[in-house]
Image (tube, rainbow, N blue to C red; front, side):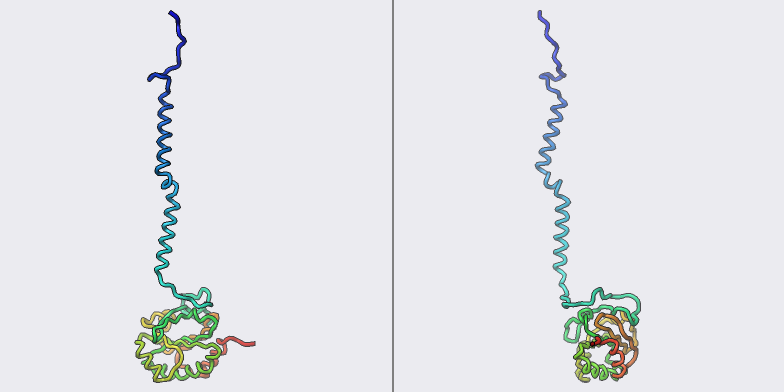
Length: 225
């Protein structure tokens, strides 16, 4: 009998290493997984972020936008401590007697008198013709007067203005929120003078004459060279 050289065979025959076969199946399985699920596995974060962005954009588009004026007072505050002369006035938006929205920050560049009043206020009644006279005298210089009525109906306010023949703007502080914001409480009339940069130049509590208004406006109206 002739002798044969021994061969390097492992149990299982045919000279194939079972570890190599197993490794091949593992690699094949991973490849198939990547083919089937790869897009989801590697694109999940991007898709989630895109979906979130789309959702946010959709929500924002559902909120009606308030159209700002071409120029507005930058960073006009909406609340804080009790206002003093030199502070920036607090922004607010209220409806006039016709339902039009009036926002303080849209009056950038114009001197504004913000007058807190009510139809039942006796001193306010005395003061209103003085405010009208000031408005007629300075409206060509851009003066705006906002008379913030305290918690009364549009009809009552409109009738009051008609009877006194007032031509400046009455707005409705329906819930007294702006009155509280400005620290007015029940002290009527109270008047804030605000220059074109949004700064409070004077605060007056009680009725004013036109001479007093003139003095305050001297520091409120834009200076001319």
